[in-house]
Length: 399
Image (tube, rainbow, N blue to C red; front, side, top):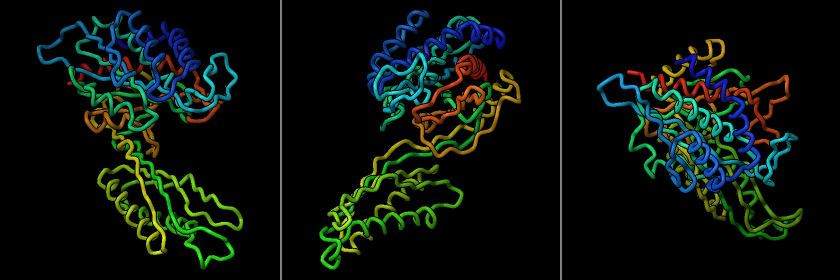
């Protein structure tokens, strides 16, 4: 089976590259992936697979049934996920497959994820008489935007009928050399919450502060004080990040505004601490503003949960990746405080989210995700499709 998968991955590699390039040239934003969904559906139908369309509006689910019956016990089901949405970024790359949509770009590799999963569909459809069990292909919208397409697909039953015993996902990694794969057991990626604060006071002439309630000063105290929620209230073993990236005090040199707006993000890897941290932040910010004569409206947009790779599943898949790739090409990952809505699956079913190396320094392919110059070494696509196919069939055979 391993040799058959590698042979087919190599055979289909050029087609997978062309699929990725088509998707890259025609990106669509989160929850607007209508043309992408039609393209994916057409590709699946051409293979001989009829997908369920319109899941969470623009998502698709496809089933591949293995026809080899090795056991009388219930057949295992494994879910494989790829996301399809792009980002509101203007592409700066000068390539033949550059985005044709102004201000929209596949800057996070979702084109590669979708192309790889379509490659998996081709490989496993050909080899369906060589495995026992069911592979559920999940083409998901809206990973980049709350509430996350994963949560909506779960709500619409993607983890039911049939219910997968495990979910597997992969994500491009521009910090890992092409040809290598990364795994991490347990906590891997952070929960993500958006913070929006409006601090109100009484503005006026900056030369007469005694007549004002300065919201700039209040907001400054709030930003500094909120860091103590992390440094003094967080459990020491629980990673957390609190950052503010936007602070608008729309006055001038001698005019204090009536209000200040602040935007930030709170990230952690413990759901109990996540709830407690947000409660403490709101209470502290409102209390400071009130004590200084102003007010603070604190709004939190509840985002994705933290992503946890189930340890036993991840160990199994890592071992199978070593068999497929060789031990030198499988690396260990550090904690990553970025967010990913694959986390919703990991909160419901045993899941593993691993990284696909796409970096090639010799060719200048080094830009990070979410940048205008992001690109991948496309030879990673052969690995992406082949390895995921191998992991799926091996997980179907796991006891």
